[in-house]
Length: 213
Image (tube, one colour):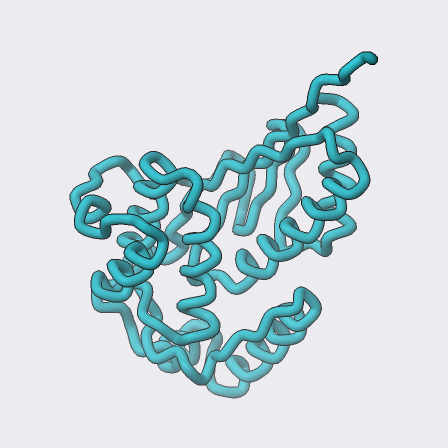
């Protein structure tokens, strides 16, 4: 019996935790990964996550959420229109975003540092923690820039938050040259796909990457 070695597809993902499209895009990628596993169980997907802080000038205590978006988008009507668009896209991914629960637009630097720490020290918990941070912000409305909130999330995943606080590795990276936003998915360092693309688009990219890997 001949055993075919497993193929690995590398997917590099640039994201920020305040970006709903990143949560939606990750959920679509999860769906594409499941479909790939059903179709080609010998193919392994290796994910690498790159933190991008979209608005690094956010103060450590954050800004009032509603006021921030009204200023950014031009008023309450524009905010309502954008949120309806986001909620429709989230629903297509099986997600519900509770904008009404969010009081603080957070500075995500501490959260990215926690993720960077978990990736290096607790890699088995990294993706679950990433999911938990998205849910904490978009579903529970928690301030993910708050050190106590982050400590509780870390503890729930078996991570010592105080150790993460002392972690001094750079937790935030710039987008690759030519890229303009997140989420950004790069397959085997060749094909780049930007935005919260549907699962079938991401699955096609995984299959194409598998064929040339």
